[in-house]
Length: 152
Image 1 (cartoon, rainbow, N blue to C red):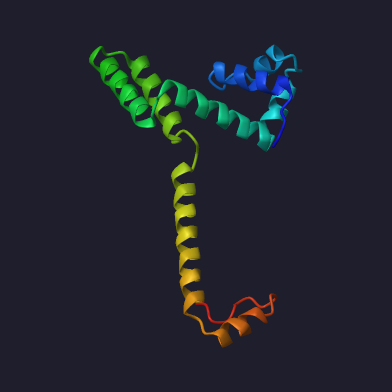
Image 2: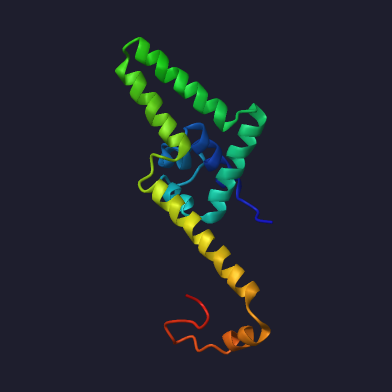
């Protein structure tokens, strides 16, 4: 189990409190150098701590993704009825962030992962269909060849 420094916990709490904005300020409030906040965010263990804290907050508040999406859509509709363009934009931006669509190529990345999983499943099926002799030949396969035997 990873033991985090108290400042790391304070940093994560401050960062979440500021809705993941103001990295330098969150670090400063935790007694760290403001520049160190950006460094901390690159650490996988800090990312896991952030995810853990966010999950704890969601569990405590009983908030579900579907509920938040519904609330943002309602806010958008209300802003639209009131002809509040800024409100419509804010609701749209928050919904995009919530669903991950604010990141470039999010859909393309998802499709790549799905296609990669399909290819792995296909490879597993081929391996299961192979005879022991073919599997032994494959085990002796020269890794420098460009086309592995038995797979098209």
